[in-house]
View 1 (cartoon, rainbow, N blue to C red):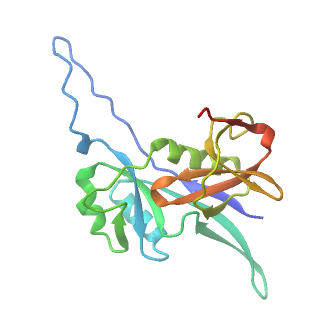
View 2: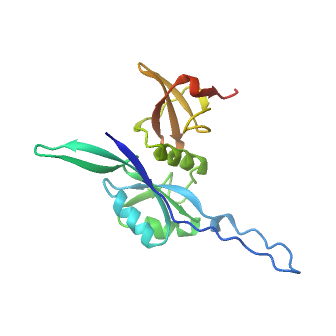
View 3: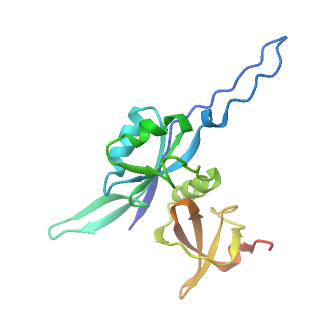
Length: 195
């Protein structure tokens, strides 16, 4: 049986306090605010990069799944990245040079000079899917009807519908990677998005 899990960042959000008699402080420049970014790594370096980022006190999200592999003499459970070659990190744009200099980092998507944040809702959708413990698998990027799951553990998750022989499959996209996560779900748990 395949099981999924994700490693989640230990992130503390500080709130600026306004003191008596002072005006509201100006908003910090956008490059000082942390955002989620997708990092492309060399083959099989996801876990090494995850540890390197943690040592720099950077929040990391490396979604993983466990596969039971039958060897000739025994079964072994292997933890694999859900998106091979990719992981997500929470940092502000000023840290880009520090991160791209890590051994094993290919680039921050789409380009190091112009990295684009990943929508936080996409990160949250993957977290919610992992938290259910239901079997998931990575699939190619697809298009179709946009839906929202209306009931059950996935309620509120938006995705794309793909019809299969076994029923309806909802695909939750992380568009910056041009990859998707799919989960099988009953058609009566779906609500079509307004056009």
